[in-house]
Length: 456
Image (cartoon, rainbow, N blue to C red; front, side, top):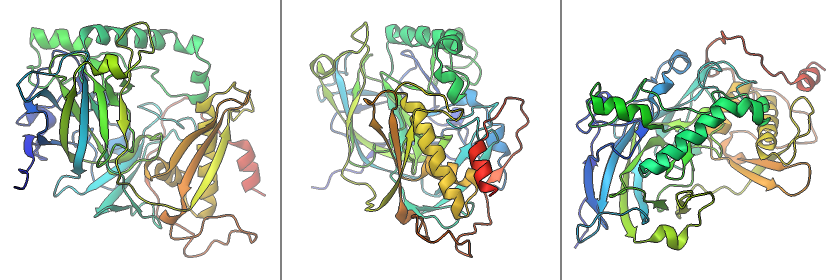
């Protein structure tokens, strides 16, 4: 007998706001956000979700929505979902929740997405000191492929995945998060030299009632006010999973999530049609609305059995996952290398973040030789299926990071040749991404050597 159609447990109406949905969405982590549905282990169920902004970014010819987006609302999640076994016994703290992704994709009638660069004064990103202005590209889907009118000459298959999938924290774990992130926000610039090089601000996103939505808890009540002041922002990934933006969590993948509260309270959102390793522009995947079809299993006592805490409490653990068997197949790559020396020439000791920044900047400058603007290249590397690696972390003082780009996504041969690059009809990409001006006052980084090289 054929298995039943997956049961829809969280429906989405695209014309309604996140808080107007039949099952209101939430954008914070807290153990007391009530679950909206219950599913049994072994049952295949469907969760629908809005894009992470809840429809704030439009399919239009302007990047002003990216520039002015309210980041206090990130990210709108569907759930929480309570998980029980075949005897009706809920997942317990200390268990592992094995979540299998059976199917996923865009919502019907909404087959498009976007990639953006945030304004440096409103979100920034990995290369915000080089790219302070907001920009946006729109992508349209044709089956498994995506293409953008703003980045011509490029077409690639997406490895679709949820940017966020996680369980609810316990109050003890929530308090650990808030305290350690508060210390980074208050003392980070004084103690972390990396802050001077990556330039992204804020250093942490602490609990805030602004833009907060807590699902079924009515806004303005005493309960809402208390929880909103405690609830963790969804921006970073943490021990519960959350916003890890792992592009390989696609069809057939299985995620083993720690359980911290009764029922696990599984939530998910931030659907991506495609993403490069690192999601470097922050709004950097092809963001979209979408659905997941999932199946769960409870591994009783699995946290103690399989996870080793890397911190002072048994709660300092991280999920593990299996990569699914379905992903785009590429055989030829162009790989860019970076070392832990920043743009000023200053040496950093085995710093993989600085090395990856250098690899990314090298790739962007290289692609600009083939007719692409640097904003086009930045956005493309953020959302195409490129592969990032920490290739060396032992050879003092230089960490080595690499960024590999599949050459088949281009309609031209981008490999170095003995003859100089000849710009022609296929190489000059006259359309560009939608851009805004940068109106802030923070200093930006200019690659002086590249400017000198380009003028000669």
